[in-house]
Structures are given as structure tokens and as C-alpha cells.
Image (cartoon, rainbow, N blue to C red; front, side):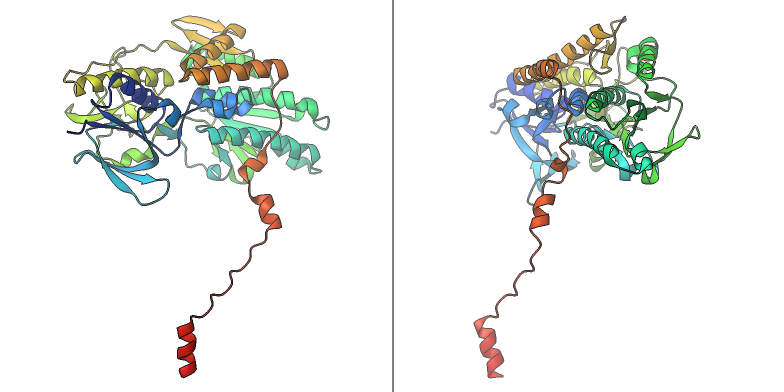
Length: 456
């Protein structure tokens, strides 16, 4: 008899940590763990701002699945459909036809995607910050804008190149904004043609505060620190349009910019719409505190589990509320989820997930940060150290911890690089310039066709 198959959809925080723990808690005679994800690595998203800034190597902000999950079966592909009624998933591999895979238990954890709005021009010029590719592109793009501004004779192009707009005042937006402002400040030392007063970083936030995760006092402190660095904070402001780089804000201001970074929240993966699992009003998979998928009436769907950004999990420490879509909850939910599946596979009963949010830490660039942990407020250099120590302790594998720490030491001693590698995004352009397309030669007529035509 074959052991039960546990399929993990998605290799983010929940998927990777759950699969890793299951592979340690259950041997292959107890269960087969299959992890399905379109990319061969897990991205540690809290490190994306530092990867974009060049403080750490982009490769060190990701965890290779095959290296970390040696006891699991890795499938590089995309899940396009889940039919829990028949307990099958449809997989579209990187290449080749789609196929179905049967399972006994499924962990639906595809995570989230950027929550965008129907703003004119956003799809043409906006840049997200959810993947390592976006982080690399952002760094190259911003440094490339400095090169453009330094040589252009057009004052309007120069001004637009030096306007950097970030939309969203949460962790991702503020950390990316602060890190990239540091990068530009460092790079300007090598651009005598540019005046630092020409560079403008603008934050657009729809609410009246930033970093709500660290509390109102620390959020206000962070706002004051950013404003003191010359960053233009536009609170209670919306982005109305950005067609052709013309930024139009709800406060009536308009200007041109060639950089627009969108970090205004997340929403569950659209893949969930291709499942027969019960979804809540915001599109999340409906779960019980045990992380079992259940109907809206509370009926458990045996063998279906979910957690993380794509799931609505009741927060038992805040009756009536849901667990926030944060890495703090995702990592802890993964541990409970793996233990609960193990209990069920071995004939036991699952336990409820309970965790009181302990606060948060945020980096505001090199040597600057804010933190609100267990009710204790910390700011400045100590908070920055807390931010780094916390995240290096959370990234999976000892290998990655050492590599990230080494990157920090090298950046401190040798200073980080401020060079753009824009050719990464167009690797074949130069080759194509020297290799013009050649029309294929017409195929020779078959001998029998010639004979036939001759006989006529």
C-alpha cells in the first residue's frame, strides 16, 4: 500500500516551512511530500529591500528548494486547478502538457500578489516588489535613471529621471524607499553633474500614517526621520493617474516621474479562483483555527489545509478578527500546520493555532530603524540591529544565514556597489544587433514531385 501523498501548493513561507517540518517528522513510509511551485526557490521577502539596495546578494535572499527539501519531491510547475471533491490537482509544468496528480492531503499556500487598482497608466510604468526579479530590476532601473539624468540636455527628462515615487506606507514600501534613498545618496558621490537637491523621493500613502505594524508613536517617529532626510511624505493622498509618467495625485499636484514603485498592499493569489474550496468575502481560503479548510458554515473538508497570506484564519487572541498576512504568522502557522497533519496521518487530532502578534521591526536604511516588540519601543541604531538579527534568524537554512551575514560584513567594510546592470533585463539585445535575422531557405522539392510534374 502506498503511503498517503501530501501536496503542498506554493513554496513561500508556509509551503517551505511546512514541507521542511513534515519531511523531518514523517518518514517516507508514513507520507510522500510533494511541493509544487513555478520557481525553484523560496523568496524571503523581508530581504527584498536590502537585495534591491545591494546590501545583500539577490541569490542569498532566496532558498533553493531542492537543496533545502531533500526528502521532498519538487515539481517545477504551476497549479492551474484544484478539485478537492476528487482530490486532484492539475499541474502545468514549465514545459509540456498539463497533467493531474491525486493526493490525500493538500496544503493550499500560493501566497499573495500585489493588490493593484484600476489607475490609468499603472500597468505601463509601475514596478512591484514581491519577487527577487522585481528587486533586481528596481535597483538597476533607479541607478540607470542617474546615468540618464547626468547626460541628458533636456531639463524635463532630467527632472523626471530624478523623481522617485513609492506608493504604500507599509513595511515593504517604507523599507524599500529608505534603502533606495540611501543607495542614491551613496551613488551621487560619483555624479558631479548632479546636485543632490535635484533628487526627490515621494511617498504616497492613502491613510494618515505609515508603518501601522509598529504602532502610532513609532510610525510617527519614522515619518519624522524620513522627512528630515528630505523625503516628501504625501499622507491621506491617492494616486489618480500616471499615464506616460505624468503623476497626478489627489491633492492636486502633478509632475513627471520615470520611477513608480507600487507596494500598496496584497491580495490572495488568483489561483484560488480555480479551486472548489470555500472562499471568504475577500477571496481567502476559509479556515478553522486548526488550519483545516472548512465551509462558511464550519464543516471541515477532510484533507484540505491552508495558512498564510491566502487564508483567513481566526485570531484566537483577538475574537472576531483574522490573523494578519505577515511572515510572523506564516512561519508559526507552518509549524502548527505540519504538526496537525502529522497528527491526522498518524491517527491523532489537530490543535488550534494561537499566537498574539508581538509587534514588528522595520529598517529605515543603514543604521536606522524602528521597532515595537512586546510593548517596548526602540528606535535608531538599536532598532536597526534588531531588524537585522531578527530576519537573519528567520531565513531558512544555516547556509543562507552565513551568506547574508557575510554580505553585511563586506558591505560595511568595502561599501556597497552602486553600478547598474541593466543588460540583465535585455541579455540578447547586443547579440541580435550583430546577428541579423536570415530568412529560411526554401525546402527542396521532393524527387517524386519533380517526376510527377515532368510526366505532365
